[in-house]
Structures are given as C-alpha cells and as structure tokens.
Length: 300
Image 1 (cartoon, rainbow, N blue to C red):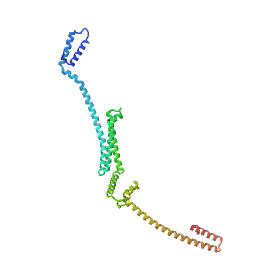
Image 2 (spheres, rainbow, N blue to C red):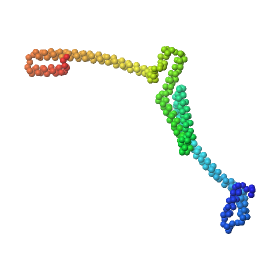
Image 3 (cartoon, rainbow, N blue to C red):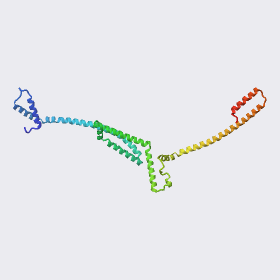
Image 4 (tube, helix red, strand yellow):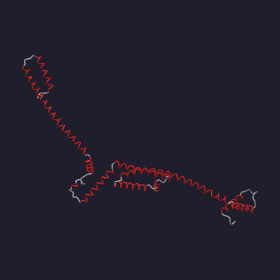
C-alpha cells in the first residue's frame, strides 16, 4: 500500500464510497470491501494509459482555448498593422513631398525636422498607458485600435496641411530669399564696409518696414509693366492736348459765326424800323426775327 501514488489512493477512496452507497442487504463484509478497494487500486495501477488520458484532457482543452485566443489576437494585430500601414502611407507621401521641396533649402529642412520632433511628442503623449488612464472603461484591444487610428489621422492631417501651407504661401521661396539675404549681409559684414558705401545702398535700415521690403522686391519685377503704363499715359496726355486745341478752335469759329449773325440781325432790325410797312408785313418780319434770335441765342 505504501507504493500507491496519490492518484491511486484517490481512486481507491472513490471505490470505497461507491460500495458503501449500495443497499444494506447486498453490503459485503469489511474484508470484502477492503479486497475490492485493493482490486480497484490494482486495476487502476495496471491501466496507466487511461489515467494519463484523463489527467491530460483539461490541459488540452485549455491549450485549444489558448490557441484560439492567440489566433484571434493575431487577426486583430494584423488588422491593426494594416490600418497603421495605410495611415503611414499617407504620412510618408506628405513627408516625401516636403523632402522634395526642401532638397536645396536648409531652412525648410530645419522646419521639417522641427515638425518631426513635434510628431514625436504626439507619440509620447498618446502612449497606451496614458490612453488607459484617460479612458479606463474601454477594452485594451479597442483602445489600442482607437489610439492608432487617432494618432495616424492626426499625423496625416498635420503633414498634409503643412505641405499645403508651404506651397500656398510659397514658404520655400521665401526661406530661400531669406538665406540669400543673410549670406549677403554676412559678406558685407566680413568686408567691413562703411555705412555710406555704394554696396550698402540696398542694405537694411532701421526705418524700413516689412511691407516696404516686399515692395522693393516686387518693383523690379513690375518695371516693364510700369513702363508700358507710363507710355500709354503719355500718349493719352498728348491726345488730350490735341483734342483741347481742336475744341478751342471750334469754339472760336462758333463764337465768330454767332457774332456775325447777331450783327446782321441788328442791322435787319434797324432796317425794318426805318421802313414804312403795314401791320401784317411788320408782324411777319418780327416773327421771323424772333425765331432767328431764339435759334442764335441772346444778344451779347
């Protein structure tokens, strides 16, 4: 009996309990029960394969469950990776475009580096544990998917808007002009030029504003247009002078004609008064003279 294992002792105890639960009329003697228990224990000892099979059934079921969970988690991880890859492609497309714009522009490259550092701070601020602390009631897997989606969309939006702003306001060209201006200023400083030097005629002055500097850059580009407009203005002024001369000549001719007409009418009036006419003839002559005076205008 001392060589029995714990499992064999448990089987023997179960057999004793089964025998004791039988009806009293069929209950065997104590010696028979003991012999039956020993026989059951021996039978159990002689069939180790069955005991091993029974003892491994629960671990196998647990293993199957674990494998199913691992497979499910693997599918979720694959889905998350696909989603993250899609968002990353959008971000990479914007980054590649910015890299192309900043190829020969060190200042724009520094701006891109600063933006990458900012996006790194976004990653730090949206780590898994911080999301769990902020939204504890959401399951871990769902929260991980939510955080990746949110961060990916945020990065894509920031990078896309960054490219649009750079292109819309021509920041790359402005930064290139700034670099050129700084290089010119450094060269002037290195030469040790005097403030009244000819080479400093377009240098920075304290009273100059940013608007004046921008206009100073734009005026040379618009010089041809300004010259064309000035030529048109000169032509219009010359034409106006000629038109004014012609109008004055026409006015003088008109005034001379009116003066002659008025003089003739005055003479006619005097002649009519000197003539001895009847009333009907005088009336017709007066009506004709009044019509002529109305047409010519008042007497001067």
